[in-house]
Amino acid sequence: MYVPHTNITVPEPETVVWKYLDLSKFLDLLLCRKLFMARSDKFEDQYEGTFSEPTFGEIKKIAENNPRFLDHYKTHREKVVISSWHINEYESYAMWQIFTQNNEGLAIQSTIGRLQQAMEPERRYEQHIGAVNYIDYKKEFIPFDDTFFPFLFKRKSFQYEGEVRIISDITKYNQTINDGLKIDVDINKLIEKIYIHPKSENWYKNLVIQLMEQLGFNFTIEKSDLESEILI
Image (tube, rainbow, N blue to C red; front, side):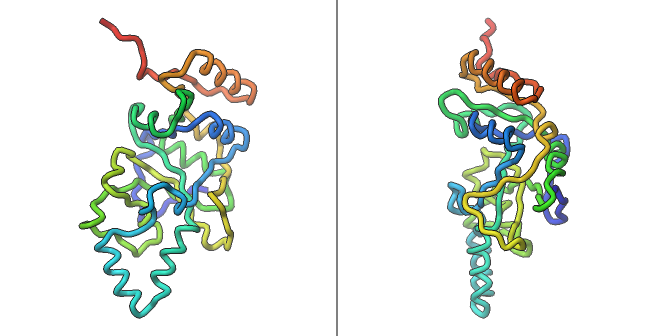
């Protein structure tokens, strides 16, 4: 279930968010009615869940008298799972390029409010939503008085992602996970609209519409307008 976190900055409920994915992952979401959350240490960015240099300097001082303090942060990444979303009022050409292949991807359009409501069916794991802060890891300090903070900061090189995250810490469940886990979601609340890849053929859009009908969903499906006809 979604649980507000007092230390995490959450965008306004009407904030528009996107998730770009391929058809297989989209169908897995619909068929299972579960949202996949990836283990944080499996992300491509090796800095995921780590600290900036100024913060690490402070942590090392503490660890001199308490070696387990630093070990905790190293292993904690295995117990934190994340679902990443992109904040943007409009479609992002860059996100299409990065997260879809072969001109056959989709984009889910939603809002922060919808994400919060969609997670209500999940009863086992608590989810928290927070916007990512982009900083200079050589100069800026990351607070470490909250276990979620390391997962809400990234290097400025990733600022184009405009990321907001659904985060869950499963430490207390004493559970081992591989690549991640799936949480129950209300699909109809999660998805407001579906956009088809801007370079896809008409048959692909028709295929997605047919699949939606067979699965009993009635989402608004639109072709991306990034490849609309040029008006002269």
